[in-house]
Structures are given as structure tokens and as C-alpha cells.
Length: 238
Image (cartoon, rainbow, N blue to C red; front, side, top):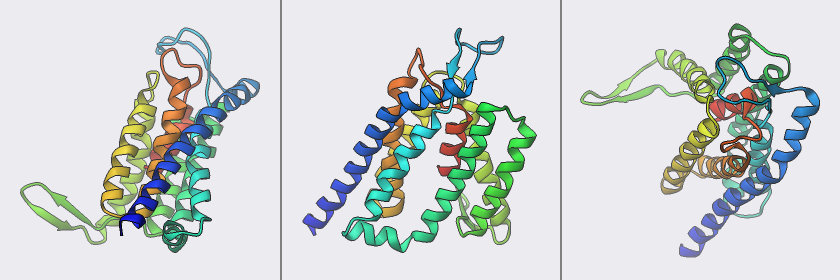
């Protein structure tokens, strides 16, 4: 039993470290790509930075998160078997994240207003919920567990859209949104490992590592920003 748990911990730690290394190495490459594409956040009246800064940082985090998961998925061990049993959920998460990543790239390169971004977000949230990632019960302090019934689908869609945009809205200072995502992912990873939720643990360990690796370039003064590419991707995945 102890050797089995030790093997699991090694996988989780490996995903965290690999995610960090990938993001750390890939971020300068993404930075160069953003400069070539003209995906730059330029100074303005409502901006605290004084020089143009590349966007698209979320690409490095997305690769840093998903590549360790892909490697873990193809190992011949218990965790790989459990991940393979969750293939549908993994595919759904990947497609939702990819859709938001592409939406963010469009916004960072071309510019999208809030209405256009919502038109991308709403179908993604609906498909995620219809795919089974919803909740139909809510625990309310002093009241207890409340069965939401069909209302749960509506609340779930609002939740996905809300969290996606919440992270996007706090992305205003160097390292802020990435730091928040790191601590949320790390906390979720600890809870998931304790609850033996392998899928959540692997994804959150990889995300925490990727965010930490990216923070090397995102701390003040930031050399690259998450952009909507990163904030939307992290938001919908969380």
C-alpha cells in the first residue's frame, strides 16, 4: 500500500516539475512569437506598465499543463489506468481549454470586445455542462445540502462563464492572475490527492507547475503577460 502511494506521489511531483520546466523553457519562445505577431499590450491611461509588453503567455502554460498529463496518460501504471477511464472527461476539458485558448489568441492578436468573447464562452460552457461537468447539489451554510434539480444546469453554465471571466478580470498587475491560478491549482491538487481524485490531482499539479514556471517571466517587471490567451484558458480549466 505504501509503495503504491509513493508511486502516485512520484507521478504528481513529476507532473508538477515537468509542467514548470516546460513553461519555463517555452515562455521565451512564445514571447518571440507574440512580438512577431504584434500581440502586444501597449501603455495607456488605464495601464500601469510603461512599455509595450508581449501577450500570448497562456500558450506556454497550456502546453506546460497538458504535456505532463499526456505523458502520464501513456504510462503503464495505476494512475495511467485511472486517467484512461476518464478519457471522456479529459477530452472535454482539453476541447474547452483549447477553445478558450484560441479565443484568447484572437483577442490578443486582433482584439475582441466583451460581447464577442461571450459568444465564444457561452457555447463552450453549455457543451461542458451537457458533457456531464455540472453540479446539481449545493451546500449552503446553516441550511445544508440543497438539491438544485434542473436549475443546476443553469447554475453550472453561469459558474463556468463566471470563473472564466473572474480570472480574466483580475489580470491587471504583474503576476497577479498567474499567482492566483498557482495557489488555486496547488490547493486543489492537495485536496485531490487527499481525496484520491487522480484526474483532478494530475491536472492541478501540472497547472501549478506550469504557472510557477511562467511566473519567472511574469513577475514585476513582467517580460510577458498572460493575455486573454492565458486568463481564459486558466479560468475555464479551473
